[in-house]
Amino acid sequence: MSYKDLEDKISQDKIAIRYNVVAEGAAMKAEDYPEVKEILPTEEPFRKIALEILYEDKINALKDVKKSLEEGYSPIELINNALMKGIDAVSTLYTKGVYFLPDLMLAGDAMMESVKECEKVLGHKSDTKGTVVCFVAEGDPHDIGKNLILMFLRAGGFEAIDLGRDVAAQRVVEAVKEYDPLFMTGTALMTTTMTAFPKVVEALKEAGLEVPAIGCGGGAVRKDYVETMDMTVYGVEAYHTPKLADAILNDNKNWEDLRKEYSDIVGEFVSEYAS
Image (cartoon, rainbow, N blue to C red; front, top):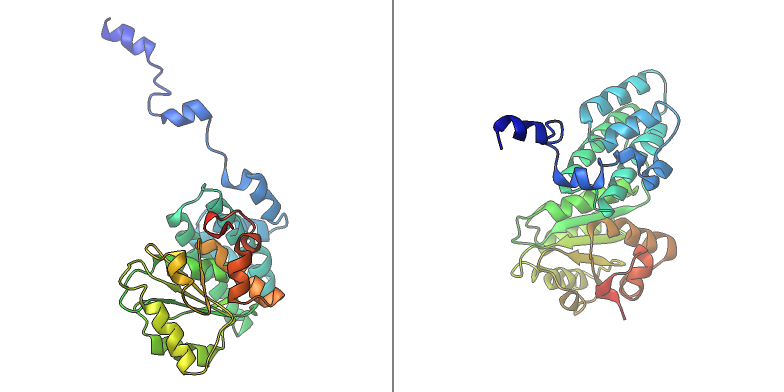
């Protein structure tokens, strides 16, 4: 076969298209998923800003938030009807496996920077449902899981306090005294650092303190290990965190309830909690 024959046989307009696009069709736009359509606002400027969060466009989101504030839109309106809707849509696509970790982080950054602009006009932090304290276990420098939890909590309307990485048990005790949180989360990536969790529980008991629940999770953390301690519940996914916090806040659930009803609370079958 000559080169000319081969050239005629190959469709040049398809040669650089991924095989799965040919097989499955072009990817659906993020805003066209039915679940996302239900979340996104229809009124402007809220829809435009929500879409900018959905598409991780921090520069234009900030620009349009500033413009909307100058035009007299309420900062609370912009937070609730645009920014929170956009990040809710992002969370939905993440749980579906359409969006991935970089998408979450970029969209979360766009949302939080835009919220800060609203809070400048508001003169104080926007109202939240309640406070959750988040930390990475002592000795552990890995904070991606903790950062995801912070993003999901803030998107869910909670004040999420970030204690950072490598947090000593005594610092956790001080944070409980300072913030009186309705929930706490601790993450650890390594088997060696998850041993910090029982130290936190003991330090709280010695100080005469108790929290409704401490969610413990991370790469090496196991459910059977977490459930050897009081006050703790094994956290399966970062995006479950606001649902657990809502259960504590709205239904007065404690750590024992969360263990027993985990799948019902998060709204999906979780094999680790199957009876």
